[in-house]
Length: 157
Length: 269
Image (cartoon, rainbow over the protein chains, first blue to last red):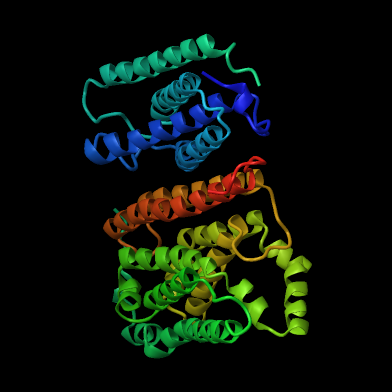
């Protein structure tokens, strides 16, 4: 429920601030959970893989740095929306799901498969892991788009 | 596996020189001097102005102590033989100490301590073209991250342990580049040439990426004279240790944006 009257000042950085705050935070959280769960706790992912390509290393480095920034930046954007009374939870969640799903799909297809950064898990039957990984990513993206569609009319700056 | 000869197997005499007391003092002394100057400046300027914030003094002090700790004493000696210890030193000397010392706002303190004509000269110097160039985030990133690439991917790392002069230059470069990088991304001291948050954020992301990529590169390609095992643990430390310190940089940059973009009519929190 967005109350337009409460807005004290037009947001300068975007027409769609809830969406962007959500997307940034979504990318950041997906990358962070990937790091914590699959690298550190389960130890399925490897820090470096012998088949890692140079482009994979560069992509990984850029995404890692960007997602670190996006987590913090996305939350500051959220705080900014809150203080302006322009925060819209449902739309923000739409952004989070699209961001997280988008990152996961990129990680699961381009980084893991094409750039050979590392595999999800070092087992024989990797296909099932890849399918689950990417299917869950697509589900998140679809759910996110659904939320964004439902809320698209309600947030018009 | 290629035969990685450890640095420790070299000529004992040269090594004793490089980790001897003189080079250690040479690296530590400038920090002791700026610390004393900082304290004198606080005492003097507090007579005319409101008391210098205590947290700045605390940050500056911890920064100086960490810098000295990383170039003098047991860690510095161990860093000469052990790559992981070297990496702890790198994180402290090239990242954490410059960050904490930047929080100390030394330029601000200097400007309020000096007599007005001298302070004007300093502020003119800060506005000069070379100062503008060196504190541009792209330039400071290249000096900082580019310098690290040069150090770890060429024979420079090996040579640094053989030649005292090179040892001193590399160490001072690491600190100064780290400091310039920090102050080019987050503005704590008075800054004549201010760049937008977008500009600084984008450069920061690329610089952090350069640091992360280098860590993983070192993991797979140990610098000359470093064993594979040590390169691996050192690289992981560099990667995650860098992340931990970068959070602070990102947080402060975003916080400054948050304050600067405060809508009219809202009270400061």
